[in-house]
Amino acid sequence: MSNDTRQNYSSTSFLQLEEKLLVIQQVDYESGIYYRSESPLPYLDFKKVGWDRIIPKEHKAIVIKNQFVSITILPEMGRIYSMIYQPTGHETLWRNDIIRPGGANNELGWWLWIGGIEYTLPKDEHGTSWALMWDYEILKNTETCKTLRMQVQEPTSGLYHQIDLSLVANSSALKSDISIWNPTPETVNFAHWVNPMWAPGGKNELTDQTEFLIPTKQVLIAERWQKNLGPSPQSWVENPLHYICNWPKMGDLMADGLDAGFYGVYSHEEEEGVVRVFDPDINPGVDIWTYGFNPDDVPMGSGKKNKGYAEIWGGTVKHFPDETAPLPANGTISWSEWIYPFQKTKGLSIATENVALHHRSVSHGLEVSLCPSISIISAQLKFQVDGKTIISKLFSTSPDNPYHIIIEWEKISTSSNILMILLDGEEEILRIQIQAFTPYFKFLKQDR
Image (cartoon, rainbow, N blue to C red; front, side, top):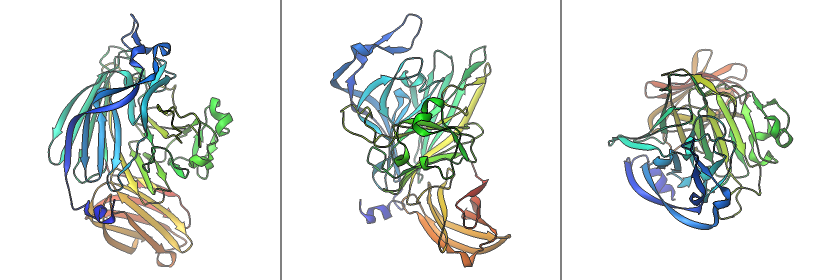
């Protein structure tokens, strides 16, 4: 894609919703599905799977797109299948070249390697909701906003699961309004996990210098993975497991508490990342799982070699996958979250639903790079020391036009905390405090 094309995105606003049939190749696994008399859930007899029979399967698909993202949703599966970053033309999600089943530690005993983003209930790895038939409807189809509702009742728990996916004009952020309702007369213990299978950079696999970005001081390693990833707990600040190239084998690591409500991945080779933003009080859990570096066992349906992807789970409980929390009779839990791609920031220090920002100390100053999820025509970046504005920069920025600046230390201060404020016109959208010569931040404000 040419630079001229990229530059024109911000001035070419459009928002579209298309319903279509999408044909995806799959192993003939449905011949092995069966039901038990005591359960409405679909189980799988692996001996009856036609492993050598590759068949086309039609799926109802909803495509929502604007000048910044193109998102393909498989609403009857309750799944986001594709998220293409329009400024680069790159896919951010891993997708299997041929869908195939495999074993899983859940009620069903199996799971589909298809890719994308799944929303899981009621507990365990992947839960059961991915295997159910979801209902859907288009709630809003205007020039400024497209909203698709997906919903299902999970039969083992009785919980109703509702997800409203929205994309607005001039934004790269997909908003999810998620609601879980317990209509039963009893308290239900559950865990909801969002599972994006990320591979930013358009390679359909993790690049060697992909970085995992979690705002936590410490990570936990489950006992079964300590042989692969080391002891538990571990400090996260300078942990080599930040990068996929330092994962010798597959495994999970969990955040031991969060300092802010976001997490993401960033491909340093392709200078592209993707981030999820959420309320950490409602969603305190973050778990990273990968196949490790240059694995041999990624279950591509074609058998093609693949470096894998990062499942970065976000949950309503802290620990994955066994912890649950109670939802009382007729109780509801609801929240909003955002997922969006970003580029050319060299990493990630903080993210809100409006902006992904990275700052770091360099030899001659403070380097700041930001990529917003919205177009900001009248942006202002202010640096304050001891309550006094020392530097103020005016600029415009958008998802296809990131902003980068280096502030020389002599122009601010090397001995005091630096307050950095980002405004959109008169509206303050980010405020962070930086200690000179360190890459760390203190989270002060995140507007919702």
